[in-house]
Length: 218
Figure (cartoon, rainbow, N blue to C red):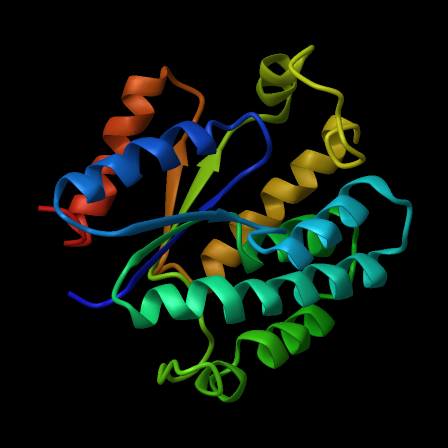
């Protein structure tokens, strides 16, 4: 069947975690081995870098370097080995989040992010990890859970102590959404925009429809 890589994108409060769980169960019901993971994170080193990125003050370049360093370790230790074993990787955020948050949200240069993306996910670095894919390592499908920032804020209110990104004003998340829209316009073949501003059952049916239409689930 081959390895399958699906990413889940969107701001906090959009419901990604709920549907990662549901989709994992759907794949497992069809006999697939599923690896659930997240970014930044997924390995001990990457989780340490995640804490720094989410909680420590730093400029956008430093954030970007740390995120891509975490991504390299994550690809090397988790994603590439799982795909080589023909497993399903479901990842809560991947490189699109870096362009959305650091690129559009923080206003960092997209060309520099693109260069970092090539260094970390390009065919040379991933070939060294045993992946023979041409071009960038990217998900075969990216599900963007699109939710208005005020709705996300209402969902998160009182749920937990916000990190430095969750504490940003609504205008920041509007910029993040514009970053996701820009990435989708650049790579429409792998993106599916999910209306996350509806009840969970309706969102799940949208997710399931997209995954089945791609031929990933029977």
